[in-house]
Length: 250
Ligand code: CA
Image 1 (cartoon, protein in one colour):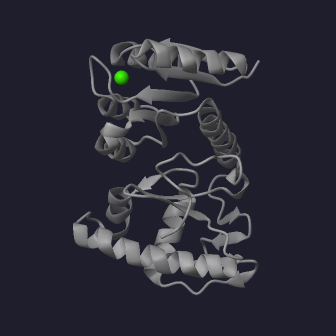
Image 2 (cartoon, helix red, strand yellow):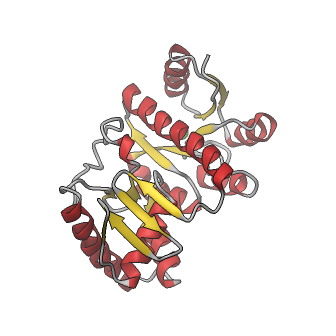
């Protein structure tokens, strides 16, 4: 039996059943909730490891559920949204969701997202044993936080201060989708449209430097219209991109 426990919050019975059956087949422990009230109760009672959360719930907005959970918990939350709820999806990521699945999704994609979260939890747990690790390593990328330098394949990457800040922000949130708004607030302290335009420029130059040094392998994944994510290198090949987020760069 898989030791991870998953809370599935979905008001649509066929989808809830599909997820439950998938989890059961793969030996995951799970809890089901069909509205926000049940979700909040189950989350606080059982403190599951991961939560799948439908945004369109009958009693309370899914984004509000995320906000309430984030007041006391960092459990990974994977949002499930319909294509028409694209803006909600971004709001959900801003509110602290970790990832998203767009309906309709495949069972394989659901399981792949779950495996990524499991690896993240395992890493977080091992990271907490080596708190304040001054060096970040992800494949061939190394960041020496104390020295303020980044290296690829042992060579120092020449970065501007903003590129370096961006790289550190993405690295500290490896595996997480960071929205444009979240990033610009962290880097510039505001999220004006002009900052978002600048972000695109800085991100393009940062990626060019990283890819050139790394045999054109892309460490940073673009989520079109949403934001960016630093991939942990072993995630390559295990996460199939959904139809609306091709893994290409732009
Ligand atoms: Ca729904």
